[in-house]
Image 1 (cartoon, one colour):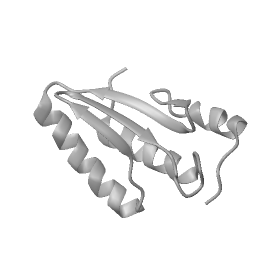
Image 2 (cartoon, rainbow, N blue to C red):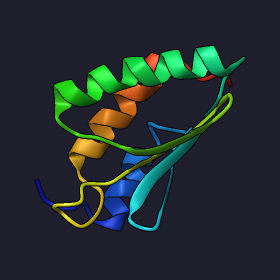
Image 3 (cartoon, rainbow, N blue to C red):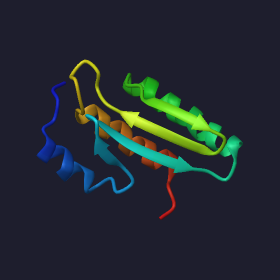
Length: 96
C-alpha cells in the first residue's frame, strides 16, 4: 500500500472530524467514563486490528485512550490507516 499525499489525507479527514494529521500519522484521543469502559473499547479495537492486520500505536492512562495510526512499511499514512480509523470511530462512538 502506498503513502497518501497531504492533500488526499486532508480531504479524507473531512469524514473523520475526531482525527488530526501530524508527524506522518493520524491521531485521536478518546475519553471514557472510567478505566473499564476504556479497556473494553481497546479490546474491541484489538479484534478489528487483528482482522485488518494493522496495529496502532496507542497509550492508555485511566480513562483516556490516545491512538496514532500510520503504515510503517509505507513511511506514513495509507488507505489502511483510514480504514482502521473509521472502524475505531464505529467501535468507540465518540460523543460530539
